[in-house]
Length: 314
Image (cartoon, rainbow, N blue to C red):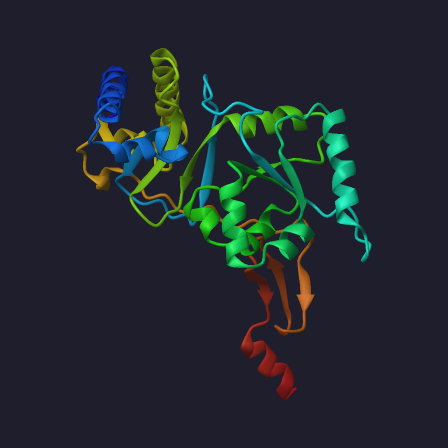
Protein backbone atom coordinates (compact mmCIF):
# COMPACT_ATOMS: atom_id res chain seq x y z
CA UNK A 1 0.00 0.00 0.00
CA UNK A 2 2.86 2.40 0.80
CA UNK A 3 4.43 1.78 -2.63
CA UNK A 4 1.13 2.63 -4.30
CA UNK A 5 0.89 5.84 -2.29
CA UNK A 6 4.44 6.85 -3.28
CA UNK A 7 3.59 6.29 -6.95
CA UNK A 8 0.47 8.46 -6.59
CA UNK A 9 2.47 11.19 -4.82
CA UNK A 10 5.04 11.20 -7.64
CA UNK A 11 2.21 11.46 -10.16
CA UNK A 12 0.75 14.27 -8.05
CA UNK A 13 3.97 16.29 -8.45
CA UNK A 14 3.64 16.02 -12.24
CA UNK A 15 -0.04 16.97 -12.09
CA UNK A 16 0.81 20.06 -10.04
CA UNK A 17 2.81 21.62 -12.88
CA UNK A 18 0.07 20.93 -15.42
CA UNK A 19 -2.69 22.16 -13.07
CA UNK A 20 -0.89 25.43 -12.23
CA UNK A 21 -0.33 26.24 -15.91
CA UNK A 22 -3.95 25.37 -16.73
CA UNK A 23 -5.36 27.46 -13.85
CA UNK A 24 -3.35 30.54 -14.84
CA UNK A 25 -4.39 30.13 -18.49
CA UNK A 26 -8.02 29.69 -17.45
CA UNK A 27 -7.92 32.77 -15.23
CA UNK A 28 -6.36 34.87 -17.98
CA UNK A 29 -9.03 33.74 -20.41
CA UNK A 30 -11.93 34.37 -18.01
CA UNK A 31 -10.72 37.82 -16.91
CA UNK A 32 -10.10 38.80 -20.52
CA UNK A 33 -13.65 37.82 -21.50
CA UNK A 34 -15.95 40.88 -21.56
CA UNK A 35 -18.87 38.68 -20.52
CA UNK A 36 -17.01 37.47 -17.44
CA UNK A 37 -17.30 40.75 -15.57
CA UNK A 38 -18.08 38.95 -12.33
CA UNK A 39 -14.64 37.37 -12.35
CA UNK A 40 -13.00 40.80 -12.22
CA UNK A 41 -14.64 41.47 -8.85
CA UNK A 42 -13.00 38.62 -6.99
CA UNK A 43 -12.27 39.17 -3.31
CA UNK A 44 -8.58 39.05 -2.22
CA UNK A 45 -8.92 35.56 -0.71
CA UNK A 46 -10.50 34.28 -3.94
CA UNK A 47 -7.51 35.56 -5.91
CA UNK A 48 -5.23 33.07 -4.21
CA UNK A 49 -4.43 29.60 -5.44
CA UNK A 50 -5.84 27.20 -2.86
CA UNK A 51 -5.18 23.54 -2.15
CA UNK A 52 -8.42 21.76 -1.25
CA UNK A 53 -8.22 18.43 0.61
CA UNK A 54 -11.03 15.87 0.69
CA UNK A 55 -10.42 13.22 3.35
CA UNK A 56 -11.66 9.66 3.68
CA UNK A 57 -12.15 9.40 7.44
CA UNK A 58 -13.11 12.41 9.56
CA UNK A 59 -10.61 13.20 12.33
CA UNK A 60 -12.10 13.07 15.82
CA UNK A 61 -11.02 16.59 16.71
CA UNK A 62 -13.00 19.79 17.22
CA UNK A 63 -10.48 22.29 15.88
CA UNK A 64 -6.89 22.12 14.72
CA UNK A 65 -4.76 24.76 12.97
CA UNK A 66 -1.54 23.49 11.39
CA UNK A 67 1.18 25.90 10.27
CA UNK A 68 3.04 25.29 7.01
CA UNK A 69 6.02 27.45 6.02
CA UNK A 70 6.17 28.08 2.28
CA UNK A 71 9.42 28.48 0.32
CA UNK A 72 7.89 31.48 -1.49
CA UNK A 73 5.30 33.19 0.77
CA UNK A 74 2.41 34.90 -0.97
CA UNK A 75 2.06 37.22 2.04
CA UNK A 76 5.16 39.15 3.04
CA UNK A 77 5.83 40.67 6.43
CA UNK A 78 4.93 44.38 6.13
CA UNK A 79 2.50 43.94 3.23
CA UNK A 80 -0.43 42.62 5.32
CA UNK A 81 -2.67 44.14 7.99
CA UNK A 82 -1.76 42.28 11.20
CA UNK A 83 -3.47 42.54 14.59
CA UNK A 84 -1.71 41.35 17.75
CA UNK A 85 -3.77 40.58 20.88
CA UNK A 86 -1.73 40.57 24.07
CA UNK A 87 -2.20 39.91 27.76
CA UNK A 88 -3.26 42.83 29.94
CA UNK A 89 -0.19 44.91 30.77
CA UNK A 90 -1.26 45.61 34.36
CA UNK A 91 -3.71 44.24 36.91
CA UNK A 92 -4.37 47.71 38.33
CA UNK A 93 -8.09 48.50 38.02
CA UNK A 94 -7.78 52.02 36.56
CA UNK A 95 -4.70 51.34 34.45
CA UNK A 96 -4.70 53.22 31.13
CA UNK A 97 -4.47 50.44 28.53
CA UNK A 98 -3.81 52.89 25.68
CA UNK A 99 -0.65 54.19 27.34
CA UNK A 100 0.46 50.64 28.07
CA UNK A 101 -0.09 49.61 24.43
CA UNK A 102 1.94 52.62 23.21
CA UNK A 103 4.85 51.56 25.42
CA UNK A 104 4.46 47.96 24.27
CA UNK A 105 4.71 49.05 20.61
CA UNK A 106 7.95 50.84 21.43
CA UNK A 107 9.21 47.60 22.95
CA UNK A 108 8.31 45.74 19.75
CA UNK A 109 10.36 48.17 17.69
CA UNK A 110 13.36 47.82 19.99
CA UNK A 111 13.06 44.02 19.71
CA UNK A 112 13.16 44.26 15.90
CA UNK A 113 9.53 43.24 15.39
CA UNK A 114 8.03 44.50 12.13
CA UNK A 115 4.78 43.90 10.31
CA UNK A 116 2.36 44.36 13.24
CA UNK A 117 -0.28 46.95 12.32
CA UNK A 118 -2.24 47.19 15.58
CA UNK A 119 -2.03 45.92 19.15
CA UNK A 120 -4.94 45.27 21.53
CA UNK A 121 -4.92 44.07 25.09
CA UNK A 122 -7.39 41.39 26.12
CA UNK A 123 -9.40 43.92 28.16
CA UNK A 124 -9.62 46.31 25.18
CA UNK A 125 -10.75 43.49 22.90
CA UNK A 126 -13.42 42.33 25.31
CA UNK A 127 -14.67 45.83 26.00
CA UNK A 128 -14.64 47.41 22.54
CA UNK A 129 -15.78 44.46 20.43
CA UNK A 130 -18.75 42.99 22.27
CA UNK A 131 -21.33 43.69 19.57
CA UNK A 132 -21.62 41.41 16.56
CA UNK A 133 -21.20 44.31 14.10
CA UNK A 134 -18.00 45.40 15.86
CA UNK A 135 -16.59 41.87 15.62
CA UNK A 136 -17.51 41.71 11.94
CA UNK A 137 -15.65 44.95 11.22
CA UNK A 138 -12.65 43.75 13.21
CA UNK A 139 -12.63 40.51 11.20
CA UNK A 140 -12.62 42.30 7.85
CA UNK A 141 -10.10 44.96 8.90
CA UNK A 142 -7.08 42.68 9.31
CA UNK A 143 -5.56 39.90 7.22
CA UNK A 144 -3.85 38.04 10.08
CA UNK A 145 -4.57 37.84 13.80
CA UNK A 146 -1.88 36.90 16.30
CA UNK A 147 -2.40 36.30 20.01
CA UNK A 148 -0.29 36.02 23.16
CA UNK A 149 -0.09 32.33 24.06
CA UNK A 150 -0.90 33.22 27.69
CA UNK A 151 -4.47 34.29 26.77
CA UNK A 152 -4.96 32.14 23.67
CA UNK A 153 -7.35 29.74 25.37
CA UNK A 154 -9.72 32.58 26.36
CA UNK A 155 -10.23 34.05 22.89
CA UNK A 156 -12.81 31.63 21.49
CA UNK A 157 -15.68 32.95 23.61
CA UNK A 158 -14.66 36.58 23.04
CA UNK A 159 -14.18 36.53 19.25
CA UNK A 160 -17.06 34.23 18.35
CA UNK A 161 -17.75 31.65 15.66
CA UNK A 162 -17.11 33.90 12.63
CA UNK A 163 -13.37 33.86 13.24
CA UNK A 164 -13.46 30.06 12.93
CA UNK A 165 -15.64 29.90 9.80
CA UNK A 166 -13.50 32.55 8.03
CA UNK A 167 -10.27 30.75 9.03
CA UNK A 168 -9.01 33.88 10.79
CA UNK A 169 -8.82 32.65 14.35
CA UNK A 170 -5.58 34.04 15.85
CA UNK A 171 -2.25 32.26 15.66
CA UNK A 172 -0.55 31.72 19.01
CA UNK A 173 2.83 33.43 19.53
CA UNK A 174 5.09 33.57 22.60
CA UNK A 175 5.11 37.29 23.30
CA UNK A 176 7.06 36.79 26.53
CA UNK A 177 10.07 35.42 24.57
CA UNK A 178 11.54 38.72 23.37
CA UNK A 179 14.66 37.15 21.83
CA UNK A 180 12.69 35.01 19.37
CA UNK A 181 9.55 37.15 19.03
CA UNK A 182 10.57 38.91 15.81
CA UNK A 183 11.34 35.67 13.97
CA UNK A 184 8.20 33.98 15.32
CA UNK A 185 5.91 36.82 14.23
CA UNK A 186 7.49 36.95 10.77
CA UNK A 187 7.04 33.19 10.40
CA UNK A 188 3.41 33.41 11.56
CA UNK A 189 2.62 36.14 9.02
CA UNK A 190 4.35 34.53 6.03
CA UNK A 191 3.13 30.96 6.65
CA UNK A 192 -0.04 29.34 5.40
CA UNK A 193 -2.43 27.36 7.59
CA UNK A 194 -4.46 24.20 7.29
CA UNK A 195 -7.56 24.52 9.46
CA UNK A 196 -9.34 21.26 10.32
CA UNK A 197 -12.76 21.76 11.89
CA UNK A 198 -13.63 18.06 12.25
CA UNK A 199 -17.20 18.65 11.02
CA UNK A 200 -16.87 17.74 7.36
CA UNK A 201 -14.77 15.90 4.76
CA UNK A 202 -13.16 19.00 3.23
CA UNK A 203 -10.51 21.52 4.30
CA UNK A 204 -8.19 23.88 2.45
CA UNK A 205 -5.03 25.98 2.65
CA UNK A 206 -3.87 28.99 0.61
CA UNK A 207 -0.74 28.42 -1.47
CA UNK A 208 0.13 31.39 -3.62
CA UNK A 209 -0.94 34.48 -5.46
CA UNK A 210 -1.52 34.12 -9.23
CA UNK A 211 0.89 36.99 -9.97
CA UNK A 212 3.82 34.97 -8.61
CA UNK A 213 6.12 33.17 -11.09
CA UNK A 214 5.04 29.68 -12.10
CA UNK A 215 8.16 28.19 -10.52
CA UNK A 216 7.19 29.65 -7.14
CA UNK A 217 3.60 28.43 -7.44
CA UNK A 218 4.78 24.90 -8.19
CA UNK A 219 7.35 24.95 -5.38
CA UNK A 220 4.71 26.05 -2.85
CA UNK A 221 2.29 23.34 -3.99
CA UNK A 222 4.97 20.64 -3.78
CA UNK A 223 5.91 21.82 -0.28
CA UNK A 224 2.24 21.74 0.78
CA UNK A 225 1.86 18.14 -0.43
CA UNK A 226 5.01 17.15 1.47
CA UNK A 227 3.59 18.90 4.55
CA UNK A 228 0.35 16.91 4.28
CA UNK A 229 2.28 13.68 3.98
CA UNK A 230 3.92 14.33 7.36
CA UNK A 231 1.21 16.13 9.31
CA UNK A 232 -2.26 15.33 7.97
CA UNK A 233 -4.45 13.47 10.53
CA UNK A 234 -4.49 9.79 9.56
CA UNK A 235 -1.52 10.23 7.23
CA UNK A 236 -1.48 10.73 3.47
CA UNK A 237 -3.50 7.51 3.13
CA UNK A 238 -6.45 9.42 4.64
CA UNK A 239 -6.60 11.83 1.68
CA UNK A 240 -9.20 11.02 -0.97
CA UNK A 241 -8.51 13.85 -3.43
CA UNK A 242 -6.45 17.03 -3.76
CA UNK A 243 -7.59 19.97 -5.86
CA UNK A 244 -5.86 23.17 -6.92
CA UNK A 245 -8.40 25.98 -7.03
CA UNK A 246 -8.33 29.55 -8.31
CA UNK A 247 -11.60 31.45 -8.13
CA UNK A 248 -14.27 29.23 -9.69
CA UNK A 249 -11.69 27.07 -11.49
CA UNK A 250 -10.69 23.77 -9.86
CA UNK A 251 -8.45 20.93 -11.10
CA UNK A 252 -7.63 17.60 -9.38
CA UNK A 253 -3.96 16.72 -8.85
CA UNK A 254 -4.33 13.58 -6.72
CA UNK A 255 -7.00 10.86 -6.41
CA UNK A 256 -7.04 7.82 -4.13
CA UNK A 257 -9.81 5.25 -4.59
CA UNK A 258 -8.81 3.01 -1.69
CA UNK A 259 -11.46 2.18 0.92
CA UNK A 260 -11.58 4.39 4.06
CA UNK A 261 -11.57 1.15 6.09
CA UNK A 262 -7.85 0.88 5.33
CA UNK A 263 -7.22 4.10 7.28
CA UNK A 264 -6.78 3.53 11.03
CA UNK A 265 -9.17 5.45 13.26
CA UNK A 266 -7.60 8.51 14.84
CA UNK A 267 -8.49 8.77 18.52
CA UNK A 268 -8.27 12.24 20.08
CA UNK A 269 -5.34 12.76 22.46
CA UNK A 270 -6.08 12.14 26.12
CA UNK A 271 -6.40 15.15 28.35
CA UNK A 272 -3.36 15.86 30.45
CA UNK A 273 -3.70 16.89 34.07
CA UNK A 274 -2.17 19.99 35.56
CA UNK A 275 1.19 19.78 37.29
CA UNK A 276 -0.49 20.29 40.67
CA UNK A 277 -0.84 17.09 42.76
CA UNK A 278 -4.25 15.40 43.22
CA UNK A 279 -6.49 17.13 45.74
CA UNK A 280 -9.00 15.97 48.36
CA UNK A 281 -12.45 17.41 47.71
CA UNK A 282 -15.61 17.64 49.76
CA UNK A 283 -17.99 17.29 46.80
CA UNK A 284 -17.06 13.60 46.45
CA UNK A 285 -16.72 12.05 49.87
CA UNK A 286 -13.46 10.21 50.49
CA UNK A 287 -12.09 10.87 47.02
CA UNK A 288 -8.97 12.28 45.43
CA UNK A 289 -9.36 13.87 42.00
CA UNK A 290 -7.32 15.42 39.22
CA UNK A 291 -8.60 18.34 37.10
CA UNK A 292 -7.68 18.09 33.39
CA UNK A 293 -7.04 20.92 30.96
CA UNK A 294 -10.42 20.49 29.29
CA UNK A 295 -12.15 21.09 32.63
CA UNK A 296 -13.11 17.46 33.25
CA UNK A 297 -12.55 15.87 36.67
CA UNK A 298 -11.19 12.35 37.07
CA UNK A 299 -11.67 10.54 40.37
CA UNK A 300 -8.40 8.81 41.23
CA UNK A 301 -9.40 7.10 44.47
CA UNK A 302 -12.71 6.62 46.24
CA UNK A 303 -13.85 4.48 49.16
CA UNK A 304 -16.15 1.62 48.30
CA UNK A 305 -19.79 1.95 49.32
CA UNK A 306 -19.71 -1.28 51.33
CA UNK A 307 -16.78 -0.02 53.36
CA UNK A 308 -18.67 3.21 54.08
CA UNK A 309 -21.78 1.33 55.20
CA UNK A 310 -19.72 -0.94 57.50
CA UNK A 311 -18.13 2.09 59.14
CA UNK A 312 -21.56 3.69 59.71
CA UNK A 313 -23.00 0.52 61.31
CA UNK A 314 -20.00 0.24 63.61
